[in-house]
Amino acid sequence: MNVWFSLLAVIILVLIPLGAVGGASLGYLFGIVIPYTAFGAFLCGFIYRVFQWGRSPVPFRIPTTCGQQKSLPWIKASFFDNPSNGVGVFGRMALEILLFRSLFRNTKVELMGQRPVYGGAKWLWLAGLTFHWSFLFVLLRHLRFFTTPMPSWVDILTKMDGFFEVGVPTLFLTDAALLLAVAYLFLRRVVIPQLRYISLPADYFPLFLILGVVLSGILMRHFYKVDLFRVKELASGWFRFTPVVPDGIGLPFYVHLFLVCVLLAYFPMSKLMHMGGVFLSPTRNLANNSRTRRHINPWNYPVKVHTYEEYEDEFRDKMKAAGLPVEKE
Image (cartoon, rainbow, N blue to C red; front, side):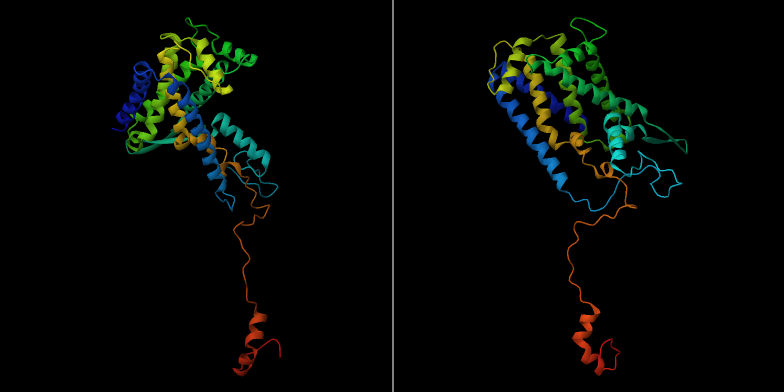
């Protein structure tokens, strides 16, 4: 049910620009107003979520550890798994962000008869790595639509991406890799019963949405051609804040653009915000140096105490009258 609900939502999103631009000629709305609104929602929402996370107090060191903590000199410490300084934390964060190290070390357990069997989950790591790196390359390639003149490194990246020159126009490797990775992540949720049981529309919807963005982009490049010069004219106008919607830009472009806008607006309120959250995770970005450095709880406030000397000064006469010993006569 969650799958069909999410799929239906994305299909409706595809139909909206088809009817609005193709039938009602609302090109200005879908070419200028909605992109600006979506980008504003993405920017404000992203900053708000990061600001909220940044305000969360972390009074103590709670790093995730997978190795020996630094302690006595003759005990070998784990530099990346249990870092005790900033260099180790930087290395752990770099390995986590660039190579998904924790996902690589992830394991799964299955029942083989009555016997639990532990194994790796490397396909998930490979699909996740392929998905994120391909998405990044696709985004960087799109800079050719927003920059004039186009940076040379974007041209080099584009040529590397189409190195095998398969088909005309060339099929980019990252397009195919991104499509396969998203398909794997979706099928994994549908095929594995345990994952299907815990999956919600919030898990399926971003996958369908990204799949729609990728498919519309591939269809637009290879089957339903659009005028790329007019696309670049519109994209350049966004950054100069003088956008003009050219005529004859092609209806598939509006479908692709609208899905991208929905993805941008949906991003800050979805699980996709792990892109920003990974940098603010105290279990990852804190050094485990609790044994070498005292960390004061920032919530500590001055506590008014009543010392014994003050107590005795206040009740000395009564204490002496009751026969209790006192320190001062």
